[in-house]
Length: 246
Image 1 (spheres, rainbow, N blue to C red):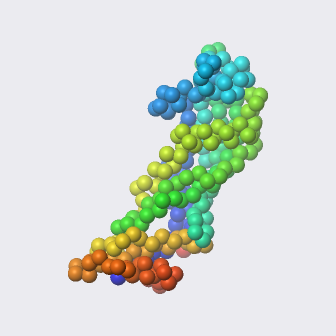
Image 2: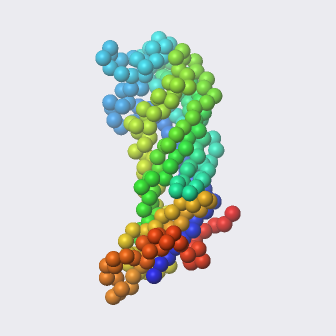
Image 3: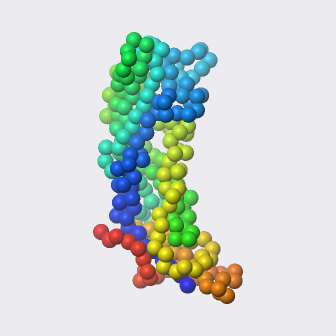
């Protein structure tokens, strides 16, 4: 027997709204938040000739703020939106980026950069098992705009380079874990699931399905009902589903 679910953009948008309320898409990159001392060292405005740090990437930063340490913060300016399209799901996140420096002549952080970032995230490595949908978030593309900088040499291109580097070092791994707890569907049948669940993105909706067996019917089958349904490209839209319609 088979159970199927239909989830709309609105259902997922509600989830991401509450994640945003708890600031799950805000970031602070500073020496106090980074555990890896090597990565934290990149935030210095001055370093050795053979080392890499913020001051070597942007010499004007070292000249204007000697012996300083950079901190980068981003915060969302709108709650994320979700778009389901055929074959994929896209999460749109708009953030404000601010960069500060604390250097030897000042006790307080001084902001030297601000910009806006518009990022498109994808859902990857999706699974549906035991009524639990899981996925990993990953940045697909992003755009930088409205750059205001007090430091020569920092522009849209250099910020894009910086975001790519931070994504590889820190952000990507954190993004993967955003949905690690999964989204639990109502338990319709308290039976054993046969094989992997069906996951299909369509325009405006996500379709989930799973085959279940009971006692003697739980013998491994050569072709499950789910595989048959997928090969015929038919998912019973009138079956039990869980959704909030828009």
